[in-house]
Length: 193
Image (cartoon, rainbow, N blue to C red; front, side, top):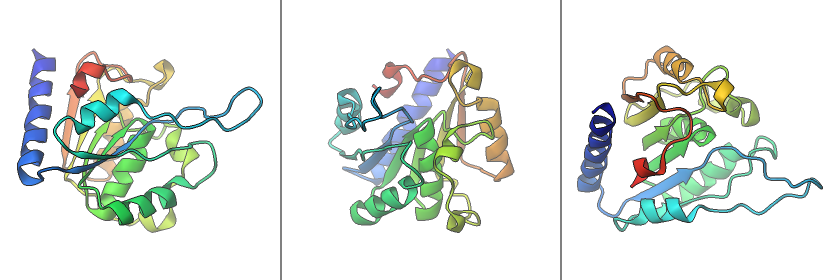
């Protein structure tokens, strides 16, 4: 029952967004993963065809930038350039991508939908891509929705969902927070269908 209620809320969120923004430009920021092989060579970024299909099924344009998490503090400036060029209507972030997405939505006043965003004090993402100085005093944009797994914990490869909520409370976030009972860090693909 709770999972169906959450899916219903997500569908309503997307329908409302579609009414306001027909043919939206969506920017999807994926989570962190190692991008080097055994010889320390940089491997090519691979976009998930599943996410491309899901995020474009209603005729929306998808901006799906290449993300190299372990190459230094380059992602905020990289994504800022893409946002300033492409002007997305919404950012969708997953895990470490939710860390970037949350803060970029705040800076550019964009709608956001973030799944298990890695913004907790125990998350690795803020150490991989430190928040630039000019982001520190930016007001939180409450036009964002956080989807958090009730059982998302760092020891299971997650981001400690309960600490994500504490972080959001410390920032006085008043947007939507949906806690999915029983969900760990990995979001089931059917949630995106």
